[in-house]
Structure formats: structure tokens, C-alpha cells
Length: 386
Image (cartoon, rainbow, N blue to C red; front, side, top):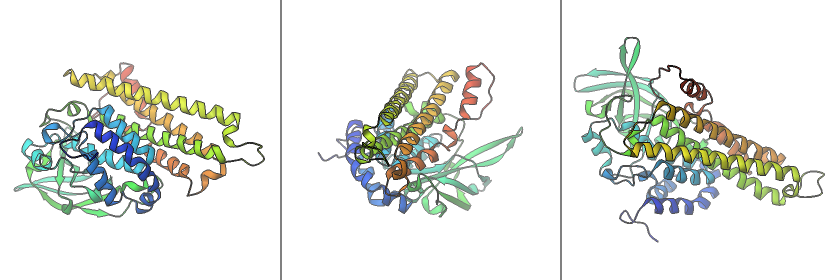
């Protein structure tokens, strides 16, 4: 079936993603070597509807639930983590721009629901008022997917009030920023997460926004929720996909591999069978919890209620725990592969590097559990975002 914009739905996107899986898996080495998702594959993902999946229906999107977005990302990550990460950022980071003036948001997305967004929350720039706009000078790291983005944003510090930095975000055209080729890394190599730089760029006031306050310019369920709550869940779903891919890999390897001095294949080894059952159970438990949290927070948004701090704490903790479980699963699969896992041709070594790279992101790092635990313990926690 040929998918057109008129026939596209959440279900057709999920189906298309599953259909793309085998070809993405075949190109994993190419993606890693190129350090970005190839342009032709970006266009396939765009045509499949990946970048409009969570966009509001008012702007041509499908307004999928968090759980459906997670399903798409998990499926992509099962084939290749860098592709899933690139789609996650390109399709979802527009959420950070929901505090733009409505006319500006419309100009960016109303006529291009497949527009790809890239940007960085970390406010590593200065932004000062000049006649007619704001002058932005700064450099941002980890701008995933910046090489093929239609919209790029970055946050900066506008000034200090009572000892607290006052942030302002700015939206750039791709030609406004310089991409520095810095993405030579050990994991998630294909995400093209280079540094970007703005050198005294003048940005009109209407293309700037308050990244931590104010009312969103659109009414969509996903923007009723705190961005960290959303991104922690979808990021953890990428980890689940990596882990499922690792179990796929080791199961195939175990059917033929005969370990040194063993009379049987790895798959016939009782200890391997035990470890595989534990890993599979751990992964299914993590998946069950993560999707339960996604359904719960989505229902809260649908009811028109803000999530409580306890809900936020439990959701963030669940995401961190799921990433931790997924990391254990990938590590177990890699170890089970023995010497075979060391070779560049073996996907298990890439899965291992990717899952550990993902776990370094601040939104799913284990110290998040300290804050979550403090909230659950009834302590007064003062945070800019959580």
C-alpha cells in the first residue's frame, strides 16, 4: 500500500517503521561510518511519517500518544540505535518551541508537518537585546541531527535575577549557525551530534521564547506535560529497542557458535539458557513498567490535570530503571558472545557502545533517582525543570 498524507495514520507509521527495520539493520555499519543517518534514509523516514508522528493535528501531524511514539522508536532502535535517536530528536524536539508566539510556530510547522527539528537545551550562549532583535553568541554541544534539520534552536542566558540565570531560547535558520565536525565518539556514532555555533546572530524577538515558563501557544496533550517527563520515557524506549536487538543478535549467534572446548552450541548450554531467560524477563518487566507509566501520564494530560510531583518522580525513576535494566541485558548478551562479540562485524559490540552512550544522557542518568527519591520522601526539592 502506498501511504499518502491523506491515508497516513499512527498505525501506518508504525507499520512502515517495522517494514524499514531490516533495511536499516543492513545499513547499520554504513550509518556508523558516516556518523549520520544517510540523506536517502532520512527521506524514507520522512515519507513514512516519522517526523510528523507527535506533531499536533493543527499543524498536519498525527498527535500520537507517548506510548505510540515509544513503539515506533523501540522498533527503530531494534534495528539501529542512531536512527531511532535521530528520529526521536527530529520528531520531538519541537516541543521545546511550544512557547514561541503562535504566528512564529505556525510559520515553522503549519505548512511543513514533516519539518525536522534539532537543538540543545543547555544554555551555553549569551543572548542580549539589540535594536530589532536579540544578538546570540554561543556554542552548543550534542546537536543531534543538525546536518539535516530544517529548524535549529539553542538556549542562552539573558541575564541574572536574584542570583538565578534568566534563560531565553532562539530559533535559527540552518544557515545561521556553523556546524563544527566534532562527533567522533564511541557510541550512537550515527547521530551526527556535532557542536553548533552562532557568532553574533541577530534573531528577531518573535523567534525567541522562554524555555522554562509561560503558556504554550498550542493546545496539544503532549505539551501539557513537562518535557523531561516525556523525553525520559521516549529515551528509555530507545534503550529497550537496543536491548531487544541485542537479544536478537545473541540468539542468532548462539544457534551456530560452539564455544572453545564445548561439546555443544552456545544455545544448548544450560547456563546460557538460564541467563537468556533472566535477560528476557528483565527486558519484558522494564517494558511493561515503562509503557504503564506512559499510559498513566497520558491519561493525566487527557483529563486536563497537571502531573503531580509524585507522578513525575515515579515516571522519571521508571525511565532510569528501564535504561539500567536494558543496559544489563545488552551487557549480558555481549558477554555471552565471548570472543565473537569483539569483532567489528558483530553487532553486539555496537549495541554495547550505543546503550552506554545513551545512559550518559543527563535525563536518564542514575543520579536522577536521588531527586526522585527526595520527592517521594516528602522533601522540598527546588528545581528549574524535572
